Length: 114
Length: 113
Image (cartoon, rainbow over all chains, first blue to last red; front, side, top):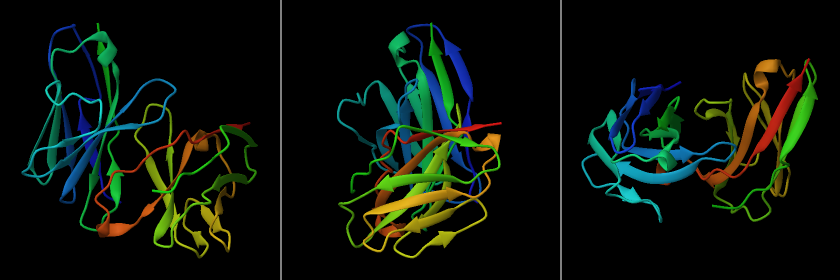
């Protein structure tokens, strides 16, 4: 099946710093990528939808200036958490949609903000 | 997308069949039933999907009732590695859908030795 990678797998940072998370589709071109956030013992919550070459669409309640998304190519999308705070600590997961329409998920990135 | 209802948790003995139910009484004619699972601290993994016929692959079987208002995911011989949260999702399939998958609370399956 199609493979989606995320980097880093886990990151610890100080409050106030920015963290960039990469999502790559390794063996297919992703027309659309999605970013989810998951808090402990909760389900995945969609944060934003990212289409290559255009601005991301954010879900209600997600600050676009805090969670910067760049989808510069058909195989790479990045999520930057700016001025991170402890409440931003979470498990961030991306998924990529190929031409068939099916979605494939990355392994997730564990962010801890001290 | 139609709403789904799943039991919050289930137990299953190793080697036995695990039968996970899902209700989707408001499903539309062009919506498929998808199953994903999420092992702790990993991304979701696709298991199987179907429209109205029963489906089987190397991971599981999907049984959809004739009225399509409910379905059951069957793991024929559960192993400890099948311990995970299982999500039943109803949505339009394929390239016509640009929408993300909406995850409910799922069923937490615990496979015991």
